[in-house]
Amino acid sequence: MAQDAAVVRLIVAAALAAALFLATLPVAAQMPLVAPRWADLSPQERQVLAPLAPEWDTMDAQRRLKWRGIAQRYARMSPDEQQRVQQQMRPWAQLSPQERQSARERYKNLRELPPEKKDEVRQRWEQYRNLSPEEKKALADRAPAKPGARTPAPPLRPPPGEQRPAR
Image 1 (tube, rainbow, N blue to C red):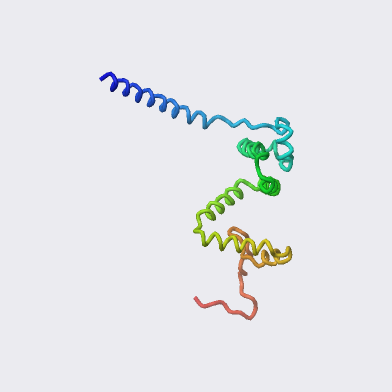
Image 2: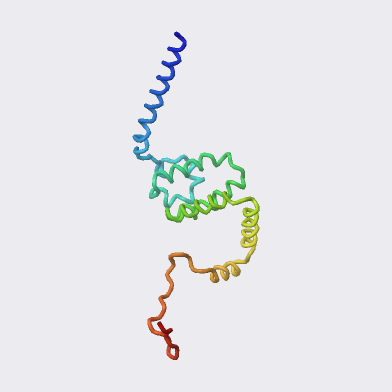
């Protein structure tokens, strides 16, 4: 009987602790993130994040914290990973929030593909990467217009010599 009471007290204490923890979550979610200014970064972090220096103090706190985390993991990365981070840092940082979200969604969709489709995408990417800059430009010029891109409006009158279709 005493053991049962002790178990009940333990369960009640755990439930209260969980309730207190959950009650603090909305408050923590509303607290603003404090991200370091460029001058607050360590010399090693500034060296890794150098491509972001011009934009650093204008970035939102969440992005600065994300990049700082990458800089802190940088020394543990392989040389290939370090090179990839450096090559991708500036273009990614310069994307708008909508462009970054779109890239994340494309990445998520690619990860969810079946293995044979992933292989096909990899092969097509390798083929594209092996194209010359001129071939890449020609391919881009032939690409269909992106959704939301402006296209010229059709003429209000048919060109001379053409008739309007009967209604």
